[in-house]
Every structure is written in C-alpha cells, then in structure tokens.
Length: 246
View (cartoon, rainbow, N blue to C red):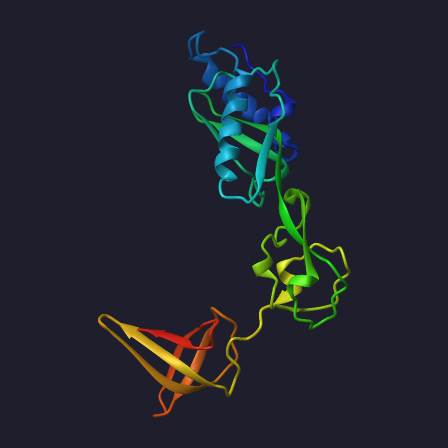
C-alpha cells in the first residue's frame, strides 16, 4: 500500500507529535479511493476559501480591511478535498498576523494551516494633551489618528463619543491611544439621589419618584425605594431617570 505523507508546513507545531497517526489515517483512506480522488489539493482553491472566510469574519469592522493570504505549498501531497472548512484556532482574533486552519472531512480527513495578514485601517483616538487622573475628557483633550487597528489593543476607542464626558481612571500621556479601560463612565444616578422611575407595560406608562439605593452608570442596574416603601430594580438612563419594565 502506498502511503501519502503530509508536509510539515501543513501542521501546527503542537500537532506534529501526532504525525504518524495522521499519516496512517490518510494512507488507509487513500488505499480504497480511485486515482481521481488521489489528486493533489489545488493551492488556489484553499487560498480562495480562506480569503472568503476572513472576509466574513471581518464584516462590520470599522475602516478599510485588507487581507493577504500566504501561498499554500504548491508541492503539498494532500488529497483533493470535496469540502474545505476554514476555522480560527481558539482565542484567535480575525486580524493581525494570524494562522488560519483548514479542515477536510471528505473524502479523506486532514487539516492544514495557512498564514494570513489582516489589516484594519481606521481612525482611532489619542490624547491630544496630558490628562490627569480623574479628569473629565472634553473634545479639546482628544484628537484622531489613522492607522492599522490590528497593531493596537482590542479596546482602542474609535469614536469621540466613546471618550467625551468620561473620567480618566489614571494619568494619560499626550499621544497615547485611548482605550476603554482608561476611562470611567460618569454615574447617571448616585446613591441617595431622588430619581424619576418610569414604568412601562402594554398600553400604559407611568412615572413615580424614589430614592436610588446605589450608584449606576447609564445602562447599569439600580435599585430604587419608592415613596410607599416598595423597592424596584431598573436600568439607569443617561438622563438620570430609571426605567422599570413589566
């Protein structure tokens, strides 16, 4: 029985200890296949499949996305696949320099890996001036730069509304890209504050007044004690009101 070997380029480093097992599985499968099925996997097909997969993974990202897939080994000895299934290894984000897996389940099981570079060029925020800890960020404190977001932290801010009016958690040097974890959203409701509680349901909407039992930023949960002593839980709004649904 003639065995078909899989080139080392097609397996990640952590998978190489299983080399003999994978080779045996492929060899056993090929023995019963026709010469047509034993045809070599076309590099163009696998590269195009990875391109399409990454386009789908990056849909909705801000800015201009460009994808470059490294050429697949033209001398590979993999049997031609009936259905290529790309995937990202666990914990991999779909941008920057990444490794994309391609799995084949028919007619022979094998897995290969290609390298790809995904760039996302967009505007992002940086501190225009040195910012003090606890300072409220205003429009004059931020400026916009354009660059590849794949070289920056995942939570880099891209919209001025994500920073304006927020407090800095610590001092920030001028020119530093602004990240979400650098800022604290101001409380919309503070503990002990009198607030309007808006209750809504099918066909009705009523307003009552109560006292907030905890501080909360917009979108956070807040408990309110009403004038009759009842305690309700709602969502703090940017306006300072609390919405309670039924």
